[in-house]
Length: 472
Image (cartoon, rainbow, N blue to C red):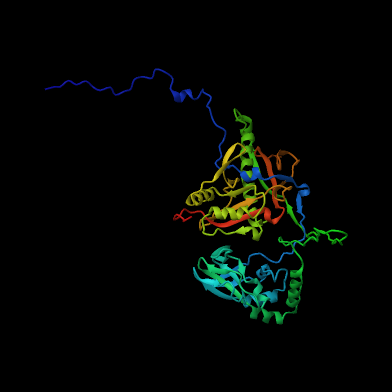
C-alpha cells in the first residue's frame, strides 16, 4: 500500500533586496572618538594654582626656624627582634644635627625592646619619666585631665612616634599625659642612666647637649621661628627693642620634574586613515591624557616633592577610632587657616560618608565650577584615586591651603617651551625613520612646593573598609 506525502520546503525564500551586511560596505559608519578609561577628573591639577618656575627651579625662602627634631624614627626588624637605626636617633629633639656615628650606635645599642598589648597603660600622668619611648609598631592614645573633670583625648601616636623626650636631661621630668596602647605592638626605651653613661664618655655629645640647652633658651614663637622683638602698649619715650628678621641659610629648592614618552605613528596611517578623525591628533590627545594622569600621581606620591611625603610631621594626625569621623575631619581642618579643599580616594570619601551617617550627620554640598561636590564645614571633599590604599585597607586624607599669596601649596611649571602644546607640555617632532614611522617626543614638566609647613596636612591610617557600625 503506498502513501502519498507532500515534501516540506527545504529551501528558504529567495532574497528580494540588498542585505544590511552588504549595505554597510557603502555606508559611512557613525563612530565615537577613541575612549580611554584611565581618564579621571584630576581635581588636584585643576585646583592647584600654577606658578612659573623660570630656570626650572623654585626656591622657598622662610624665616629661620629652630627645628628641634619632631621627625619619626625608623627601625629594622630581624624576626621578633627590633632595633633602631642609629642615624634615625637624629630625629629626636635632643640629637637633631648630631652626626657622630659611633656615639649614635652606642645609644642605639642601649635601647631596650618592650612588647605591649592592647589596653596596657605605658605611662601614667604625673608619674616620673626616666626614659624616652620610641614606638616601632602599634597605636597609642594620649589622654589628660579635662578642664571640667574626666579624661580628654590629647593625641594619637603611631609607628615612628616617641614620647618622654624630656626624661633624658631633666631628672625631675614627669609624664604630662597618660599613654595607653590601643593595639598590641613594640617599642624601644632608652633610660636616662644609659644615656648618661654614653654622655660621660663622649665629649662631642657633651658639647652638643650644651648647645641644645642654650638653643632651647632662645626665644621662639609657637611655630619654632626666631622671635621678632616688638614693643606694644608703651607710653612716653620708652626705649624700643631692636630686631631683625633672620632667614634660613639653606632654603629648600624645588626643581621641575619631567614625564616623557615617544609617540610613534606610521605615515601610512596618518596619510590614508585621517577621515573623519585625524589619527595623529587622536593619538596625541590620548597620550597627553596619560601624561597628565601620571603628573597627578607624581604630585601625590613622589618621594621628593609629592604631597604625602612633604607634609610636616606636626601636620600629620591619626584618626581616633580608625574610620574617619566628623571629629577627625575637624581636627584636620583646624590645623591651618583657609583650607581650600580636602583630597581623598573615592573609597575614603565613601568611608567619610559612613562615619558621618553613624553620627547622624550628612555632608554639605558646594558648587565647584558648576559641579556639586560633598563638603565639610564648607570645604570641598574632592576625589583623587592617586592616593594609595594599603593592603590593610587604610588610606590618607589630604587638606591644603593653596596659593603664593596665602603661603600655601602651589604647582610649579614653566611655560613658553619650544613646540608647546599645552602650558608646561611640549610635543617635538623627532623625524621619520627608515620604517616610515613618525616620532614625537611628548614632555610634561611640573613639581609642587609647600611654602609653609601648616599649608599641608594629612590624616594617615584612615580605615576605609566597611565594618561594624560605630557608636557616635
